[in-house]
Image (tube, rainbow, N blue to C red; front, top):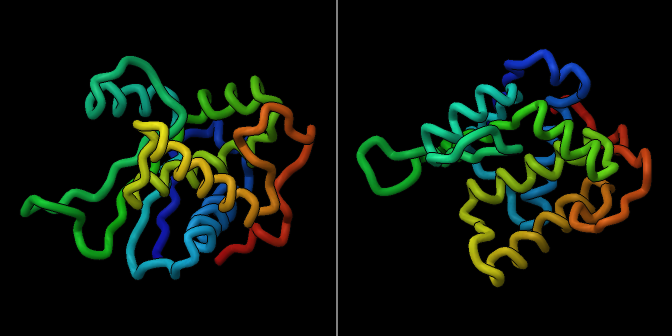
Length: 171
């Protein structure tokens, strides 16, 4: 899988190994699904709150920024995804950092979880209803475990627990 990682906001310097983290999180999703990565493209954009607020307003008719947005690739002829392109995952620096702080989680852990969450959306998973939300959350927990990270839905997390360095290869 070709993963394009773009950093548009300097606030993401707080997470220096974000590209390796993104690649590890993507790999963990496919391991959790027990299927190989498809021969496709994925973009992950680390940007600021203002950019995400603009996207959220334009594409979802919602005010303000959110932590992560997923945009599946649209087929220009209509009716599905472009062959070989999954879509884009866009993360808002300020929102993600504030949530990590409020939840007492390391920024890397929370960012990994949001990439996992966003990718599952691109793969067709949803949390609109209880049954689908439970299935999606189980996959998120499984992917996070593949990264050696705690369940992101647990209230109490181990302070200071972070991504294992061996998972941050530069593939």
